[in-house]
Image 1: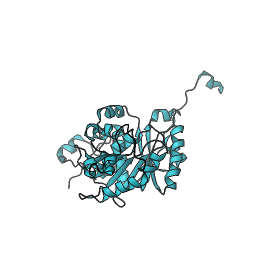
Image 2: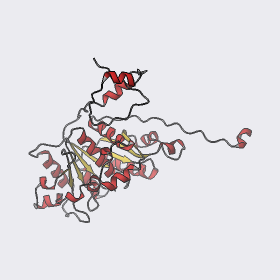
Image 3: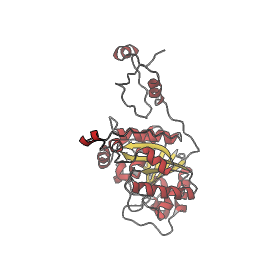
Image 4: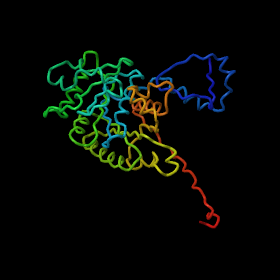
Length: 326
């Protein structure tokens, strides 16, 4: 029986996409000393299995926040592709009317020829409006409307419910996940986007304006009957938390009272990946934010959550008068 040896200091972060590597046991024993604890090995090998899909399929998840600019579309793109890399079929719906951006983040803006509006008008079939990603064929994008266009007056929550039902009854089979990228605000577009969903992912940042909007959106989701609400805290900076310049994840969780799906650190690669139309989770080597999105997708599959930990505050600098009790 071959035993894998890992050195805690040299262990590289692993992607959540299942990957099984064949190691030479002789070389492994020579290169790495015997680990002190077996806990690290168990946690490392745990990610080499495919997550078990919990709940009934398809799972319709709306990704929302209330406040704009907190990372809803970035979360939809990276979590959606992470789910596809884990082997699940995903349909991502950009429900932002007139201001869609999900196609840009995925690099699919030049391939969107038809939208849901054309499907409802009878100008095309549903499969013609679905844009399949060439990198991962089990990921598809569906846009509600074209940029700078207005929806028909009759379009609302019932139309989106019909759309989700149509995706469920497709000949090629129902997708495992339907992710709905919700527009900012709490107006008619928000109500339309959350209507067909049975669970929600609330994206927020650790600032007071975002948290107030997130708290308001949480109440609206619960009023609509959505009880399975999890939270992703985006753009977290541990250096600012230690300096007491930013609220910690524990503070955010205490204020909102939601289960924690993931914590995404501040990462300059987000802007680069957005401009290239290449999501973070596809970067090689992976970035910290990309790994965090993959872990959030893993927890979403198994309907799991994570536990926030306390970040120690940096001791305040003592001045000359501190010797005299100042």
